[in-house]
Length: 154
Picture 1 (cartoon, rainbow, N blue to C red):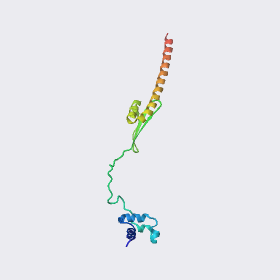
Picture 2: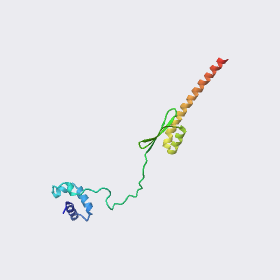
Picture 3: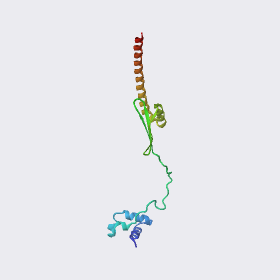
Picture 4: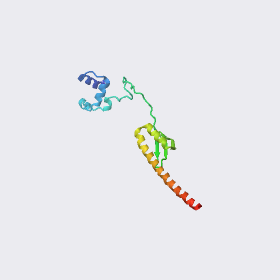
């Protein structure tokens, strides 16, 4: 008679009928089993090693197993309104430093989520205002240059 059977017989004498696998698992999991039996045998001999994989009779999962793909899209913008995109598939770069228009970034952000489009539109509007101020300053400088040229011709 093995130790497993002896543990099983003690378990069934004290408790209602339990499957042999459950009695072995319960008995091997209780730390006081060695002190009750008084046997100096190592714990490895008391219970067999659990088998790999699912236990027999276990119900199969009905969840659909889906394969996930990790794509990382990084969109970077500057204060001047220049935008670039980079795409990484796992650890491999698919595209780096692609210049994209600010309008395309704004449209894409609106399509993705409202929480994304708000902050991105703020950055784009700040860049638009900065560029408009730059254009106004250059137009004023151009007018001065035209007046200076006209005075020289006269």
